[in-house]
Image (cartoon, rainbow, N blue to C red; front, side, top):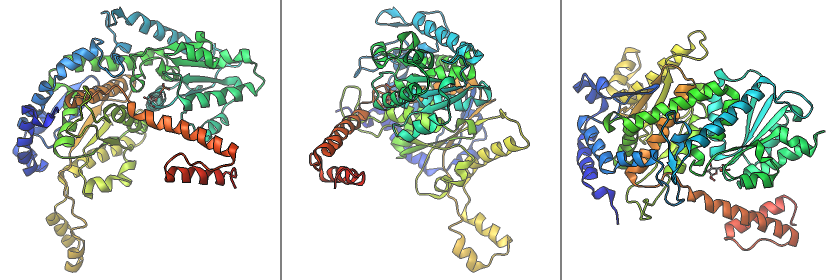
Length: 554
Ligand code: F6P
């Protein structure tokens, strides 16, 4: 059995751990005046301060040696050159080709994918311009005012997150809506807000077999046809984004209205492909090009920068350091930017669907833990909710704070307060507040000795909690593109170190199969008037109780 823990690079880190746990972050800063200068990096659009981590020069050397030993440079080269890096599905993972700005061919199975990539981008730009300019008309001759994207997972989270993040650049007369959940309330509540004459539906599904998306798309089409629209009007109001022309046609969408992508684009990496159409409709082709450029520049950084100065590599190494050596199990994403409010949800899919794996690429069981739970909410809201646990809870939770120096909406002193809060949190998490300081503060405020004794431990903060701060000038299409690509590569490097496949997602299949069996059993039980008995007693019991609550069974 492969045991990563037995490799020399891993052992070197294990041996180093005690020394790092014996010193605090505050000690490290006191010992090294140049710490901030040393542990910082720049990459396209972004500056990273990673000095508030449990590392020193020695730690970074040992971590970089691990990346080297696990073949990160070779694996990056394989990724970017279109090798089969997803062996369980026999596929390349060439999301970088979707944003590539150079003139070299990028080949899959010997043929250059770039002409196809650019042709689809051109078609998207022509279509978006028509819709944005009011030249694409609905069936009664009115311009499109609302776009409803119907998709789920990678066909929803990326476009939703990016259109929200780039609101300041959005078309003023075009409203974007996203429907993902098979819960009918999602579609019904959205349809209440739109008019069939002026609504464009985008059915986004890589496979075009996803039950949630097809169910929602059917409901939208029926709703559309219940208006005065005829079947022949569907073409003016429905477009598809998919790799599966056959299924798109079978669903009833003209393939002339289909924007194509390819099986070498993973669902959670598809934002840069036709799946980005809602983003292009919202921000326009020129801004979409800036978005691609930001990601392309981050690709060049990831590809060409030595490991120790490579931002995605360093971020990944820190995650490995905490997950595997400090035993952390989750990672907080705290964007201090309201427009990034869906970024943690987007990163959840990117990270957890990619690195939620228990076997190595060769199928053998992993011997160390892999991807952490990723979660978060924007600051400052989080400070008034879950930050208590970060500061005084028993768990160590590494965190990424994401911040722009300038606001997209300058307004009074809001942005200065936002910045101050972001920096205050990382400082507080690191420094904490020792009991001696708590006592001195209370004494100075004239609090009685009894009261001080009763409260001092409650008011003590241990500190020593690690954070990264990612800083950009302003959140715009370029910096957002670069930020997303940064995390894509971080996730890839983590997988490279753990030797797992980040590009498949077999773990989502079982639930889908069982949902389909339960659906059939529930209907059959209703028809037969008999309870279900083919599952475990809990599942049978729940099915039968629900059927009876729905008045189908006495
Ligand atoms: O069920 C998981 C998943 O396959 C994701 O990986 C994917 O992003 C999502 O479903 C949607 O898939 P599709 O775009 O094929 O509808």
